[in-house]
Image (cartoon, rainbow, N blue to C red; front, side, top):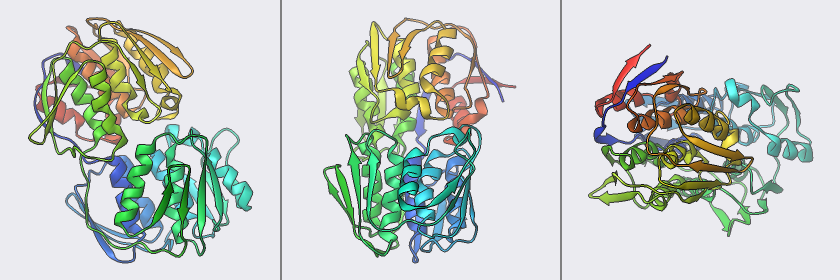
Length: 421
């Protein structure tokens, strides 16, 4: 599906979708408890459906009641020896170690860009533990394994995705002995690890955090039931907050002002661009602002890259984005793709392997751009239309379903004028 946006001012109140990061974690934790849990305020995006399907394959019974899940889990009593992660990196990386609590043969499959997303951190662990595994020469999936995790010391590089660490944090408490995760170097994306630790604590799992240099994990632990309501997703606020900075009048509800979400950094980042962020009576919004160039570090928040690239491209002066290499291994290479698409619209961006230099311009012009099948690229480009007078066409715009299935309906409800092809 392609969409053409006829630029209009956007105005209204938006209920931000529930956090995808927290939804994944809560569903997994509940599915590892043999007691019944209720998870409320769930949006059934493709990624979340992949995790639900995966946990069913590991023995959980999950019933859907509107936006609520009723879950009675198991300690990895498999009902299927195949886990289909679809396009969800979180599902795949969280579930590999959890599935390997049970040592019987397992296969992991996925689609599109996910088959190329690295799994080397797990492969190194497999080799040390003697877990047999196979995968194609030119891809990471399908991955077939034989063997299981054992208690002990696990070394993980701190500068790779925290998803590997989260997967181990879920799995190791279920083993029949104690384990330690040693972080090599400095841990990036601490915010995501904090989300995991908070969910684990709520579901009765104890992890000793030695200032993010190591995590001490007692074995023979059990997940307990917990009724959990998922809070709004800060990574999704990014698109509406940059819209506010660019002149829209949008207020966001459903956000937790003391959230552990690492993507809450969007407030700090937009403020550093001279955006005027307000949190007033449970409504979060950004007033129209004369934004100015700044320096932003993406080591802890790679999902904010596309939206902030758009805002920086229409800010006065020059912005420098650092530690952007992790944006390159998402649904697409978000550094190169955002540069290519925004430059079609009149922006100017220089890129290096780990940095971006963005030269601000007052206006963009219309044109035809491609989402590269990346939900965050599509949503960021949609908001770029606020700085245009001509129409903007976004190719493959249906990819928003990965995290925000009704994004285009919300866009129209705010006054957006959209034609679908």
